[in-house]
Length: 205
Image 1 (cartoon, rainbow, N blue to C red):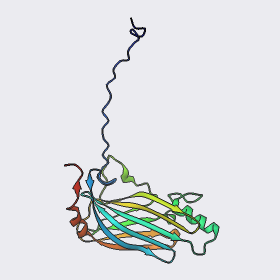
Image 2: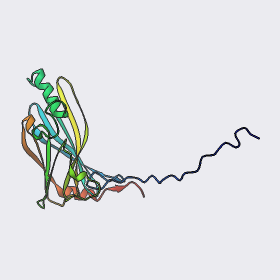
Image 3: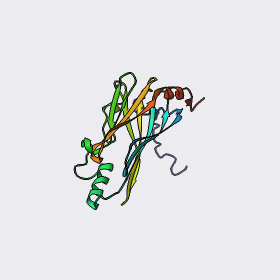
């Protein structure tokens, strides 16, 4: 007889099925689509020390994601002023919390049908509720990355617009009062987005 033959065997426990999480469309892009990429290449703001630009748009069947970037160059700021600017861009330090609207980049969209939506790069959007569908349209900022040194600060992110807008002029707006940027905007032809949506491909056959 084997020494361990009568050792108690553990009971078999049926494992619960691990169901794939599928985020609702107002939260972000579909996970099973290959988007169509459209070049935008426009400046939201351009000055000697700060540029804010929209590089491109990724179009899905349910909405579109705008690729944003901003770069700040040091001009004559003191060390203290430059440290405060870093804090404003990356939201750290005293008095730099997400509730300080003038210290964060605000973004918005105006659609051809009169609809509009707003968000901030550090805003906690209520529509991120995964159960209750919000009133359309919505904007969600999806942070990218950033870096800084003694001469320059740069950051990027994506702006998710749901649903895909109708044909007509779409106005993207920005404001960053803490950095001296008053309301500014660019116009994108919505018909290009809807045309690009026809080329979106499913990942799976």
